[in-house]
Image 1 (cartoon, one colour):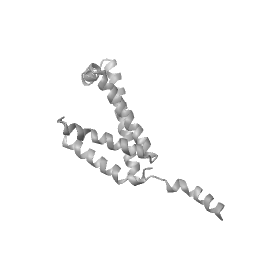
Image 2 (tube, one colour):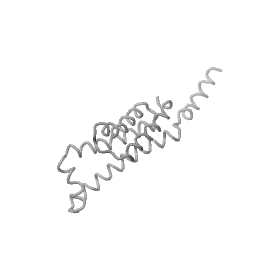
Image 3 (spheres, one colour):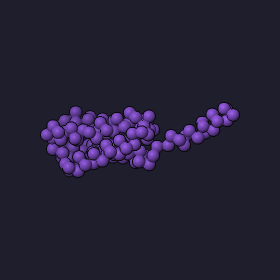
Image 4 (cartoon, helix red, strand yellow):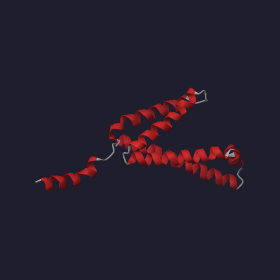
Length: 137
């Protein structure tokens, strides 16, 4: 009987660890946001390399400050990684999500210009992650 119960539990375990729709949406938000940031960088870099004046002016700041470019790429990759961790239900993804969503709030507290929309979206993101916290392992 014990073997039967163990076998049944192992067959059902993939269903038992499915993330909720809310957690999947938060994971998708981070994955898609990171992918779009990387795509924007790639398109902007290609347009600037091939002589597009609007792209050159848009990305002139990034070209003049390569550290910012690396931070943008690192942030975008971090969002993709966070989405991946969240989709697997890992608590590290939740920690990274809350940390990245806290960045605009910290900037605002330090006197940096931040729009109210950014602050509201960050707060909603933290609420969404926090409300799914019990699912993360």
